[in-house]
Image 1 (tube, rainbow, N blue to C red):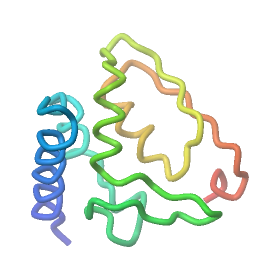
Image 2 (image 1 turned 180 degrees about the horizontal axis):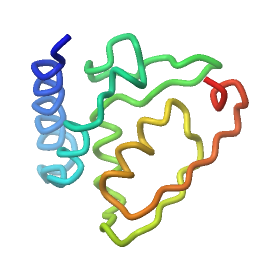
Image 3 (image 1 turned 90 degrees about the horizontal axis):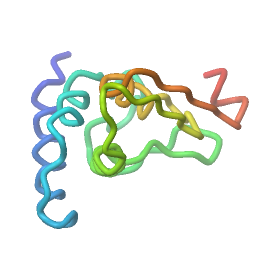
Image 4 (image 1 turned 45 degrees about the vertical axis):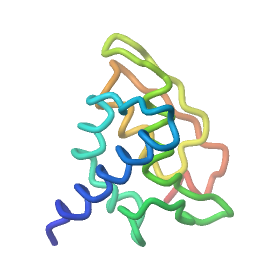
Length: 116
């Protein structure tokens, strides 16, 4: 299945939310590029490109795409940085970060999520 139309719609929604809710500042192009490259549908099977949180099991959710983009943008990371993420969840945030910085370490506290 070709997810490109859904991905582009997700990117448009992220940019619209950035203008409306995040003080008009655009999301860093590196974050947008990573979100285009990383196949979100590999991390969450249902509604992967809709701008909504989605349950991933064990009373946890994957954050909606705008929140992932905004949080990543607010980190202001560079290609030289190393990032520690607490709460791996589906692994999507770590995958996004890995396209922007040198190294990502991630820790998951819920064993069942770690194994899935």
